[in-house]
Image 1 (cartoon, rainbow, N blue to C red):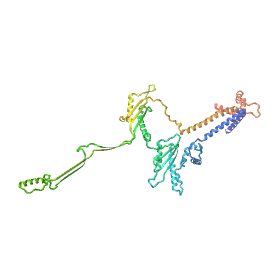
Image 2 (image 1 turned 60 degrees about the vertical axis):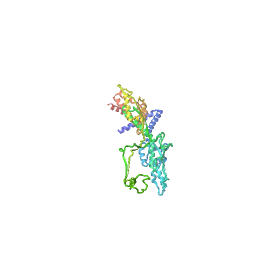
Image 3 (image 1 turned 30 degrees about the horizontal axis):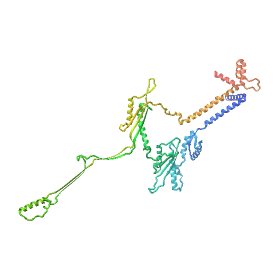
Length: 547
């Protein structure tokens, strides 16, 4: 069997060579050029398919980090390319994440700064000043790395001004910090992120307050506010943010309660809130009118009573007559009269009585200390727009009709309950039923094949399909026509070494076999088998297949 295959292969090659020799020079040149182009194109496609797809490993690297990473890649035997003037390093796509993890274990890239690993190389005999400088550099590097870990920050530099400690309280100074941020193109930091960076730096340095931290972006714009007090309108950023949160909360509450009735995207609510951010403290001392002693509360009572004798009390008629010395003796009648007068003037002995009573009552007094809450709602203004009702007809056609007055009244009552409507506060509410004009459709969710993780797979599939398509094009457009041109020549029998008659084709041989007798046919078949065994084999093969 192997011998037959080898003989058939040699005969096929000989037939192709004979057919090629019978072609003209122009056809020969065209055939060679086409065959060489097809082989070169197939080889190029094969080499292109074997070339790995390179992806960015790191970009915007400093020269120091770039050199260190290239040295590590060479040690790991990882192929790489350098793009964008040395700012980006590319590695095969199937090794990107593996190489990143392996480099991260080595602390690469360092981001152009040093961290606390600087303290590991301290030498013996280093002065205290140099140790303090190295510690400050290490702290700045660690803070820069922490800030660079934020998604919007591309690069960061931190400068710390830490004063020398002093034993005198008056001469002590507070440290300060300055941060320079390099943001990615098209990215910005909101006030919350800026405050986060400020407090991150302030919490990492002893005695550093948030007011002493300054943040600047790559364009020189001040990100940290200079005056953290009042802004335009008398409100600071925190109060404005709270105001927007209150308004958004009321609007979301109204839309959520009406959505089950009107349907999704069929209601819009806007709320304007007037908040009182005044910090008010009030102290009042109130005295009520005096009450009756029976109803009043006794606070204290003091009574003083003095009873005692003070000697012979003075008697008689006051004046000069009673104070004169007694006169000379006289007649009894005169003496009796003088005694009676004297007794009246001297009087009878008596007791001394002194009483005092003091009662103090409590005064009805009320002391009230009131601190008004900050951010109370003074007034709410709410506007609600409801889309027309969607009604499906009998034929399945959808139409829109306005809501009835009763339904609008129900919606109005629901909104009042949701917003906490208070007429004494001066709240206002307006509900309008209107047809929503169809706008631009919301952005559809991107299909799965457009996801970043599937783009590489799609590219590989397209790449392989392109290679297969080009290969089929070469086979059916170039190689197959060339083989067809050589096929008739290959089927012609070769000339005998000394033959004078021209070779006969296979069709003529078959015709002779059909016209001649058995002996003649047998003789012709033997000659044909000797001359062209491949033709005989093909005939037998066709007989077997047809049988």
